[in-house]
Length: 302
Image (cartoon, rainbow, N blue to C red):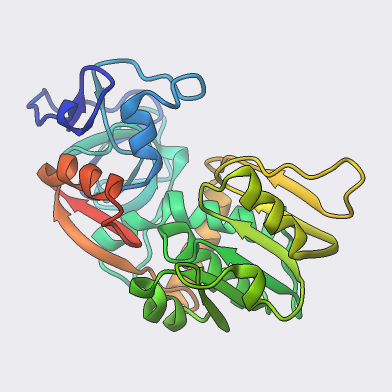
């Protein structure tokens, strides 16, 4: 599924191109599934070209779960038949090549296709919880945007760290977020977050786009010495504020991904796939997402 120019969802087209061959240090993966991420919209529209310029025409997709079917030179850690997951480029296809050192073994406890939901959202949540917020047992953590793909992982990882988790979610996501372990759920469509909190939190994980005014409100909900970690837009705090603000873009870290896979296999973390759609539905999924009709993680199967 490729685009030849930036634009609306109509620029996404299905094309048939030669099957790629793995280069030095690469493997060829037969794709079991890829996954949709909200950032895909920004890439397709060209809103992120200053940070992530695309070499057009470009095959979409940024994460993959699949089976190794061919191994390139100098690859020793992987073999034909291995089931793998990882981040990559051009994964919205039947086959994709990837550097072997960017992949990890897929979890055995869930269907291989479902594992495509892990590499981007899961690692983003991992780095937000453990690296930037440094969530610890006994803390109070607010996950702002718990109904999204990253949010579902963030709720579970914060709970795993021993935190009391407050989550914002719309009514359609409330049951799912509760099942993932949130201690308190705030329906942001009817109740201001500030009105629903009975005491400040130690950390906020912001996973939605907020205005400057909304960002100011979030900062006021954090105790002195606490932190606001945003995976979307930067949150500004006054220079003399006792609250720290961190804005980050998740990096591709196979050690984080492998650690997350272990938690999935141990049953500590669930992979909440909300829908499985054919790869050819990609343009329709982009439209649904732009209209607010997508919840959680949607995987796409060739």
